[in-house]
Length: 307
Image (cartoon, rainbow, N blue to C red; front, top):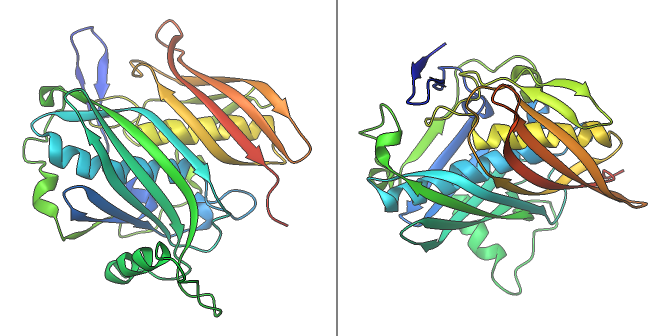
């Protein structure tokens, strides 16, 4: 396990060669300094039981796509995700998944990025995707009758807090501003075994209570030495789905409050609303190995999957 000591005596776990984000086989293109496109295949490994894209996967892609323009504009600072929200506008069931992120605000302490999430329906060329996204926003242009084109599946909003670049190890040459116009593939040569949830080694301790655990390992670590924000979203999605297994998580509002210092990260849930076609649950995330410190709060909406 790659790790190093920190000032408070805890060990900082660093990302491994095999990582949950790389296993999504994603590619990015920083179109301009304030816009990034992300593309990833929709496979069974990152799908729900209903065959739709996992909400945790979508939130991970939003996090990745938002970070490139954010980091390009704030160097030598680094960023940490503070708030992340994704709301579905439709079912994403074909793929590839495409996320279009754009800078909204760059401040001295905070950076805000908006995201549109699309089902590309088989289209994977970045130039074609960029054109199709532009056309989809033009009035009077509709998707072709043969099913080609793209459809909007969700929207997201992410807030980063700026942190000193000295908090991150081994990334002195990490300069997204030099990547404008480049397609960067972040995948692996061999497809991973099992689902994303299995590879993360999530442990459902109490399904009805929404208690699920995730260890702080190199597979889910980020460059700050804590659990990746997208991996935390997958953990929270798993907890919500364990509470309402007949439904699919479609919307999440996630507030990160502190970093995982020891682990495992452990969820607990309460039901806020049960209706005929949906449920709303509240999930708390704590650091079970660090005095149950509160890590994050999330509200998750789950709906009945398409028939």
